[in-house]
Image (cartoon, rainbow, N blue to C red; front, side):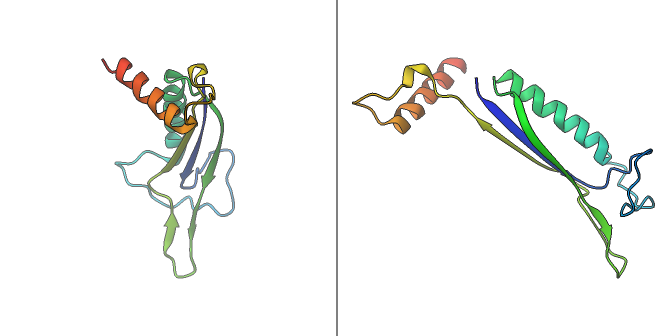
Length: 120
């Protein structure tokens, strides 16, 4: 089993009961894009589901929101989300260090063999 982490960068959340002074409630998001809050919920659920299926559960992560109007009135905000996911697989017991093999080569070979078997 391995482990993974995920990170998300989205626009201002505009939470009903937790307004922030820097958030602009008049900012309009395109109708064809989900709200930043919905993106965080869906992306987190998706990353967790993906990691669990491959034995790499999420164990850490980060979230950043950003949106502001600069003095000339231009809006600067992460309208489209930025998602980061990183996984750290574990070393298979069949690939313990030995005198006659290169650990990197052994890991790559084992990875190739496992993928070949699993893909049919």
